[in-house]
Each structure stands twice: as structure tokens, then as C-alpha cells.
Image 1 (spheres, one colour):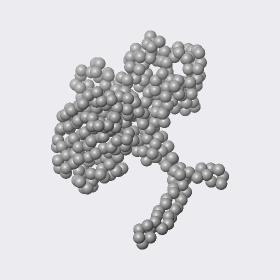
Image 2: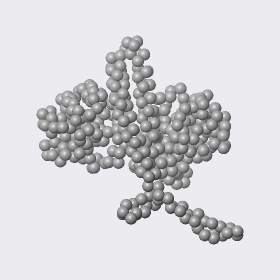
Image 3: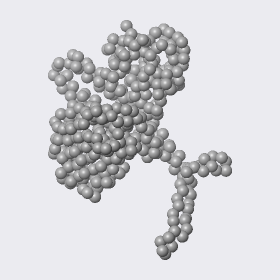
Image 4: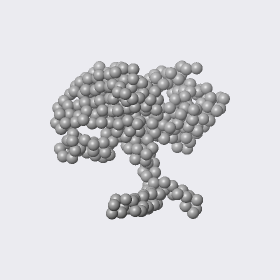
Length: 271
Length: 121
């Protein structure tokens, strides 16, 4: 809450009210406190500005690298039949794919700051969700040709949502399904309407998650402790972001998992 | 031959986009900033301008609005490019541009946009 000070300037305050109960458990009085948190708010704003600037500074060289790599790939496609060109092509293609990954990480970092500040802006529009799911899965089929992506789709499902953000959630869930299932090459996906919601499930046959850890995986920076932490890299923000994005849309993500058998993440998105 | 004017304070981006557009059959001129842009436009007569938003001395959005308000340059198609996330909240109506291009981009997408705008009347 903001209060106006004697100089007419608005200052952020954190207000807390706690009841004090008597021996019968009834409220005897309230104790209230108000704390000036203006400096914290300003710090938060500075952090947001810094991350925003950092993102710009990182994206600028990424744009140039990506451009050079894609120009080189064009030249190879046009007149590169030599053995050297044949060797270069997969490396350049891989660099191009990794740049997409890097751009995604920069975007995640920005979204994290926005969510922390409570101001993730959604650009909602009407679109066919089944077409988006198909597109995302098709991209994974191209980039992960050793995997099998089974997709069961109900078609003609129109939603009003932020297309890019929903795409980001799907990419995150599918990438996790691949990452945490090193001994499996199958990802099962399904999409269907159920009442007022559309359900999109991503099922893997990987390492699974202990019952105790299942709700924690949606927490910011949470990493499952033990062997998984040592074997799988990451910040622990992917599922936090995915869940936050869906919550901003008025939906939720549920999880069913059995340790050692695999996990199913289901997005519940309002229609 | 259709002409493209590139305005970006990043020399790497200028180099990449020049190579791309020349490869796509456009005549290209590069500008490192927007100083004296009106004179350069008069000289080169571009069909499309690809302009970065953060140009140092001037903001590309302000330059875009100025060019669109000037009857001599208002018909030229303008693409504003940026890596800034703050730009995402702006609409084409706010900037008067014909297209907003977020960095990093795929060069095939950029080539498609250039052809579409250059041959659109």
C-alpha cells in the first residue's frame, strides 16, 4: 500500500494485522504494523531495469551470431558439396539451434523478473490451440529425430491466450520430458476439452518425482536434491515460469508422477 | 531494383543484413546512425528502411514518426528492429512503423518481410 508523506510523496508500506486471541480462542485485539518498504521497491525496480538492460545487451550479439550462422548455412545449401561443407553443415545447424535455446534462457530471465514484480504482460489473442500444439511438436520432431512424439489431439479448439507464452510453456514441458527421461525416447501428448478448460498433457517415462517433491517442483529455483541435482543441469525456473504463465491465464498445471516410472504434467487452460 | 536503407548502430548487424539483402537482390545502403537521414533518403530513394530503435543520439521510434509525418518520406515502408523487451508493449499505431521486428530474428523471416514490403504499394 502507498501512503502520502508530509512532502506529498507516495511511499510504499507493508501493512500487517495479526489477531491476538484470548484463552477461549476469540479475538481479543488486533496488533497492526506498518513498515516503510520504499527502498525495497526501488531496489526491485533497479533490478528489473538491470535485467532488462542485460537482456538487451545479450540479445544484440546473439542476433549477429545467428545472422552470420544462417548466412553461412545458406551459402552451404547453395554451393557446398565438398566434404568440408558436409562436415560444417551439422555444426552450424547445431549452433543455430543452441542460439534458440540461449534466446529462450534470456527470455526466461526477463519473465522471472516480471513475475517477481507481479507485472507479466500477456498479449492475448484468439488462436487455434491444436494448431499451436502441432507446430511445437513438429519442431521437436525435427530437432529430436531419435525421439517418438505421440500426439492425440482434439481439433478445432480455439482459445484466447498469449500464443507465444503458451508455446513457451509447451516447449518447457516437452524439453523437461526429454531431459528427465534419459533412458526413454517416447513422449506422449494429448489435448482435449473438459468442461470450461482445455487439458494438455505431456507424459514421459523417465526418472519420475518423489511424492514429497511433487508440489515443490513448481517453486522458483527448486532443484530436486540428490543424484538428479548432480546429473541434470538447470536453474530450476522452467516449471516455475510455466506454472506462473498458466496461472496468469487463470489456469493451473497438475502433476502425476511415480518415482522411476515417469511423470505426466497436465496444463489446465480456460477456454 | 528495389532499395533498402539499413540504419543500425551495430556494425555486425549492418554487415549481416547487408549481405542478406544483397543476396536477395536488393540494392542496399548502410547508415550507422540517423544523423542527416532525410538527406540520405533523398539521395538513395529507398523502398524500405530497416531501422534499429536504439540508435545512440536518436531513438528510432522518433525518427520513424518524423519520417512518416513528412510527406516526402511518408510512403517509404519502415521496419523497426529492437532487442529491447520494453518495445513489446508498443503497437504499430504508436510508432507509425509498418512492421516491428524483434531481435534475434531468423534471416528467412527478415527476407520475407523485405520482399513483402518492397513490393507492397
